[in-house]
Image (tube, rainbow, N blue to C red; front, top):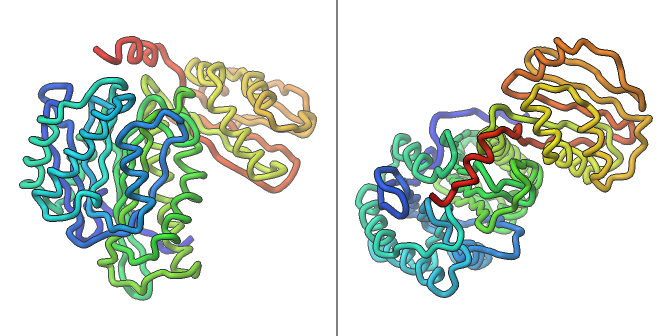
Length: 410
């Protein structure tokens, strides 16, 4: 592993990035509900978006921006209302939001991304959005505190804010990569109900950054699930302004590999935090599949384990009912021989094997319960069928998940 250092901060950790936040009253009163990130220096951008056919207006706006060769300067994010299933009025709201930032800061309208998260099918109060943008433009600051408050302002049902930053060396220059994300419900592989915005001062060619983003997302954000619902609003964007002064990365070389490794570290951390903070969750539920016949098989098996409601309920109940996890593997679509499989439960409390080569093993139920009471429980599966592995992250299924989603609009 390269010398990647975890540092303080998040979206404002890299050179040249400022953030702001405000209480705009988009849907709720007396809470931070809008955030802004800005780089005066033009950025190259890369992104990935929801696989849901029903895409929010803001997702469609951002996809057009990312696919273009035009520079990006910043992003405005609101919570409370998702701006999904809103027709032309939804697109008008995107344009009005971006134009307000453009007018205040003197950058092109089509250099501003917009993000929305919250209730589907409600129209955004454009007057409040514009007022919020005007307010934030006067409060932009590069402090770590502003970055943290921006990460708080994008929360919906999240219980904790999510931010992370790292630094690394490229040719004697210190490069920083940081970011923030939100996500707690409507989370399922192939992006989730999440908004993640990352910033870096690295100098890199756009197409290479996009390739790195697409590959890293596949093994991080696309490997988490809370409830099996793929949102209309999933957005991941990375901005890079080149202010670190490193030799611009224009080929897949050692510098590119270091950058990609750092990107994985940040994305994995944010993805794990989102899974652990699933709506109503009490613990992180991890599945690690090793020695599968292919990478795809390993990923499918791991995701199937953590996506199963019965498996999630067993994790919540601290019930070492290994049959539920094997069952989830069996209907995943992967063809395998159960007589080759070994299954273990792991946590900080220890490790326990419960199944070996098609046969259940006798085990200490009290020790199993102790293992499953920890705040992260790992189901470790050895397929004995190859040399590929994958990890997926989810959470337990609790009574509170139903309570939260039964009255989400109120």
